[in-house]
Length: 278
Ligand SMILES: N[C@H](CCC[C@H](N)C(=O)O)C(=O)O
Image 1 (cartoon, protein in one colour):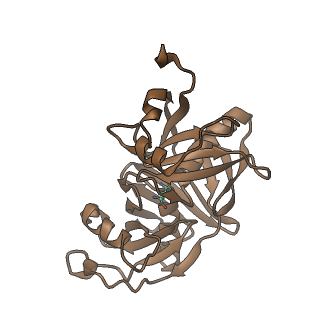
Image 2: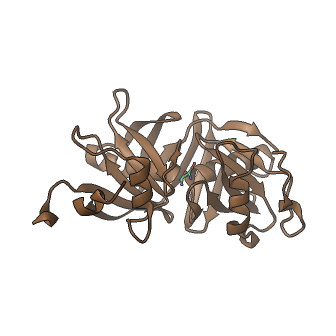
Image 3: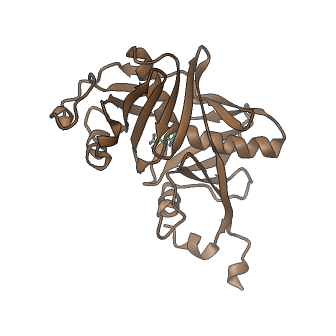
């Protein structure tokens, strides 16, 4: 009865504002670790499970746990705000706590449950360029820009464009061109935002390694930081993304981000399927 083989790998599927994740806990000593090939295979929405990012929970001496993030194309991401909130929601329930600390490639981050939402401190932004010298046909008149784009790091790279109407942007066309522009040797996530009120932005995103996604937490943080530095908004902003609404508050201690989280299902990857992953 090979389908009852207990060597399958358990996972949890969650999403935050439609930004969807597979979460795998590999803290157990005998657990199979995530590899780029496993991330790519699992990220396949036809032959795998499908996700925007895969979050791997690892042990950590100084924190409650460590998180590694993988994109659907098998590449690694240094940060993922929405997956951080989803995993924190799970772990807080497990640990019976309302706050925790987790280690990531960009450093130690913290999360808190306040009322029914999980807030995560994404750390301080890394300000690269307030205006990127991007020589692109983005400014052809088809997509008028409100100034050049800004480049903001949130542990991962973001290139943020302010445009009069983010809805009009053809993400599939511009996103990959900017993602792969030689100005960004590690590629970049790409955001388009327009101001809809003094404290509100409409934002759409093309993610490095994942393509169009319904939301992006670190992208929302980067966009809020860029909007404030450009004098468009204060330090607290609400962002309406394709899959829901996120709120960002750039405080003294870092950029806090919050929004909804949902547990979709728990599952077990079959050993037969795992065998096919090379
Ligand atoms: N969805 C994520 C960001 C993924 C970024 C990833 N695509 C990268 O390569 O940096 C978030 O909520 O922050």
